[in-house]
Amino acid sequence: MPVGRTDDLVALVCGGDSHPLAPALRGWADSRSWLAFAEAHAAKIRKKARLASSEGELHDLIAELAVAALLVRDRRFSVVYEPHRASGGRGPDLGVTFKTHTPFHVEVTRLRPSGGEEDRTALRLARVLGDKTGQLPPGAANVLAVIVPPDKVGDDLIPAALRRLGRSTGPEADPASPGVPPEAARAYARGRPRLSAALLCSLTPAGQPVEVRLWLNPQARHPLHPEVARYLVRAAAKG
Image (cartoon, rainbow, N blue to C red; front, side, top):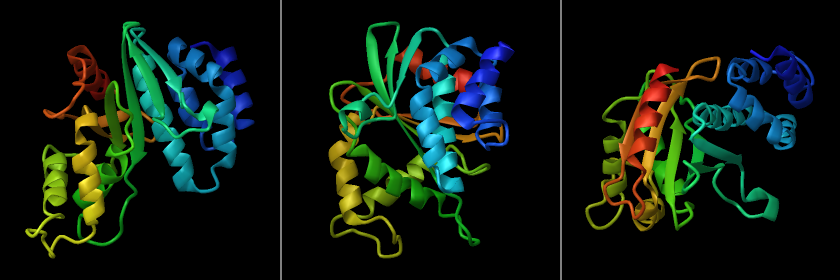
């Protein structure tokens, strides 16, 4: 591990090891390609770390950087953090190019833990799909990376969320399935061709992906490159 560069990065972004982001930065820094990425985008990361006024906002930032760390681990991926923010526009969190010629976008979001005994993870994922899918840009593949609370990722999570979206519109709308607004379901239906894949995983306290599931959208206008799909599953599963 390049200790000097890591210390400099932590000092620049966090101001010191007392910042709650520092342990994750050090955990990812075993990769020289991650250090290069973080150094190139240190100003953006530092600004977001300082503006994070709540624990939730900090965990949102960690989620974005964890997915970036997963990608830059492989030199076939060139990753840009928040590529459209300089122009003032809203866009995906990551702009990625695979093997210098295959671009795709990655939007990262996080499901907040919910209280109570009822497991509402599928409902919350359905809301996220409705909210985020309509925002995905056209013209290239799009991956929605969703960080899920520990022990909530399962093979049936995406299908359950899709069923909730399907029951939220039209005369067959199910009143026993509240919480997915019809407009969100319609937004998902309109934007679904732009969604190439959904990557679901949890994060360890050190910011490493575990419990990974990758869902490929058979209706995608731009399917995810097969090599990218295989990498996401294999690399993320290793943590």
